[in-house]
Each structure stands twice: as structure tokens, then as C-alpha cells.
Image (cartoon, rainbow, N blue to C red; front, side, top):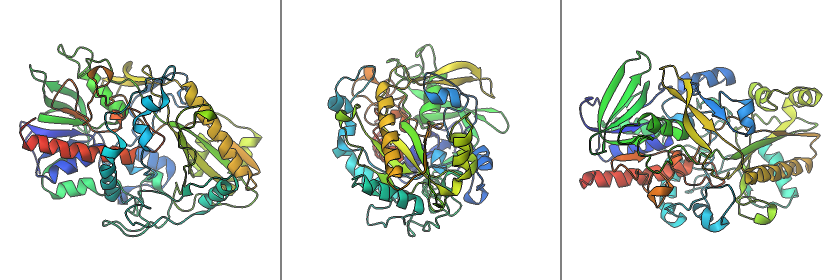
Length: 520
């Protein structure tokens, strides 16, 4: 379906898990949508199952800068995040983990109390109200271990991990839930255990919006999908309601305008606040919908790190799924460990190229060479934990310019002492797990460029504390919504995609109802 640029439409910016889900929820209810996507549409037959070519094919490599004391600032200053610029968004290369928030993680301010230096805030929603949307999201994604769907088989990396967990007294470990089919489901085949999640899934067994939501929205005849269309400004009328989106055709460099009756922004936690800040006007001098000065603030990226171990015999950890299992015992809040919040340990395997780049950025020497020479004998895990929101961890418009001459975003991130304490605890646990099953060498890997980008447009009950309300609607502007992970008030310990999809389903239902009742 083609929608005239002068027709006032619902415009959804971004086609990742949030944006594509909202677009599908609206179109299946008969509401026309224009979806603007900054990148191309890459189909599964076009994926390059080779790490560096795939990275160049998919990654968002536009100009960005980074400041702060976090290690990633030194290691990857021009690449603070590892996002995909294509239809389907970063879920095109996600590992597929789909855990839920625990109930207390919606209310961390109430649970943790005042944490010095942190800008904690309770969500304006809770676990009880989100439960039915989690079920809907799990059914849409096809989460294993849920809804009667079978688990993925255990690969060697998981078997080493699970045996170490068992020997250390842990009880809550399993091969999921994940968004990769173990058996055919929802029109997608079962996994062939090909291990190419980070390069795009040629087999089609892994959920991403370009496999499910986008094709189904197109089939309704109500979606006008426009790839290679980068939004650069949201405009508003004299009453402060949004009325259009300016976007650049990235192939021709032509500037276009699409009239809008509603705008939903889902550009991830960096591009979404950047767009709001670039849309400043005389009515909104500090950025669109930014009377609270909260746009761009409270950026989170999850506490991460990795532990790898070398054994005396082959593990072949790269065979099977990239991420093959969880350990959840350390998720529950237990301040006696020296920090609030919790973390998951999740199995992880990288190919030789990425391992060489990420194992010890900028490092070398015999110990590093021993790890790389023993690649077939490696096992690996990733740490995913809750990092503290901090007001000064934020996205701003920097002095650098992008390819269109527009201000590139600067990402400022300082580790909080709670983050550092949690990471060190997790490193110790990971090493104990591997040493208990005979590891000859272990290695603590610092955080990679991040894919779990959260906050910057957070939900809040009060206008002064955030940017959006419990529906993701901007406090300042009634017909402007945010539909991605930037609305997350706090990050919890779990991988965020399931929660982003659940929130987007909920928002889509609400927005469709409001439109049909003429309330927007």
C-alpha cells in the first residue's frame, strides 16, 4: 500500500521489535501506517554468514562519539553500540534470549531504596498488568520453554556450563527460553543448530520482525514500508501537536515530508532521543517533548562482560546456537553480595574473528595467544545484569557531523559502583563454574559495544521524572509516542527484547482503541 505524503497517517519510525510490533498491531486492526526505516531491507537469502562481512552488511556504522569512564569508551569510542541498520532492527542479529522481568524489577526504587548516584524510579506499570502481554509476546516470538513449545537441545558449550553450575550448587539453569524454534512453529522451521545468530539467520527459525511482523503487516494492505528513509525531524503545529516527519532518502539524498496524525518513534535508545533533540523549536527549545529535561538522560546498557575458559580437550563451543542456555540463580536481589539487583549468566560463543577483536581489546601476549590457539577447546559465557540509571549517563548532540551534515549523537556513560561490584562478583562466579570442571585457563573479557540500549525516554508517573507515561505517550504531546527500549524506566537483569515487544503490543492495542474512539 502506498500512502500519499500529504495524507495524515500514523507514522512509525523504526522497524525493530518495538516499531514493527506497533505497526502490525495497528495495521491488523485496519489502521494505515507509514513505516520509515533508516536502513535497507535485507532478506535471509542475502545474509553473509561470515563475521566481518556480515557486520559491515548489517551494523549501524553512522558517526557517533562516546565519553565517560566506562572501559568501552576507550576500547570502542567510535562504536559504542552494536546495532543493526535494516528492516527488523537489531533483532536481525539478536541471540534470542527471552526471559521476563521479575515482579520486583518493576519497582526497584521501592525495593532498593536510595542508591547513591543512581536515578532509580519505579515503573508506572507492574508485573501483574504486564503478565498477559508477556504471554502474547512469547507466543509471537515463539519462546521455547513457554506455551508448550519444546526446548532447544543442549550443545557442548551448554553441557560444560551446566555441569559447572551443578557442581557449584546452582539449581536454575536451562537451555532457554529463546526465540529460536526447536521445532516448526508459526510458519518458521526448527533450528538446524547452525550457530549464525549474530550474522542473521538464513534458516529462518529465529524470530525477528522482518520474518513475522513486517510481512504480516504488509499482507493486510495497510502498511507503506519505506526502507532507506532516515527521519531527521518531527514537526508540530501551533498547538504543539506533531503534524509531520521530515526524512532523507539515503540513496538519493532527497528530503521528503510525510504528514502525520500520530508519530511513534522506535529508533533505539540513541537515535530516538537524538531525533527529539534535533526537533527542537521555539515551543520546545530544549528538544521536542523535553520540558522535563529528561530526553536523552538515564541511558542504560546492562552490566555486561564475559568469561571464557580453555580446556585440555575440544569443546567446539561454536557448534549449535550462539547462545544456548541460562543460569538464573543470581538474578534475585540480595544486597549481602555487595550490590543491589542481579544478573544472568548466559552461554556465548564468538567466531575466531570476533574473538580476536573482543577477547582483550588492544591486548596481546602469550596468555592471549594460548586462548586463541586453543579456540576449539574454549567454552564461554556472557554476563547480563541490571545497571543503575544515572541522570548524567545520556545522549546529547555532539560537535561531530554525520553523512548528512547533522549533529551526530554523543553517548556518555560512567559505570556506577554498583555495576562494578556486580560485574566483579559475576566474573568470580563464572571462573568458579569453569574451574570446577577442569578449566586450564580462564579469561575475563570487558564489555563489547552494546546491544542492550535502554532508557533515555523513560516512562514515569509524573511528568517531571521522565518523558513518557505508562503507555509510552509523551507527557508533553498527546499524539507522540515512543515505542522502543528507550521507554524503560529501569533495565532489570534480563535481555530486553521480550519486554520491548510486550510493551509494544500493549501500546498498539491502546493506540488503536484511542484512534477508533477519536481521542487522538
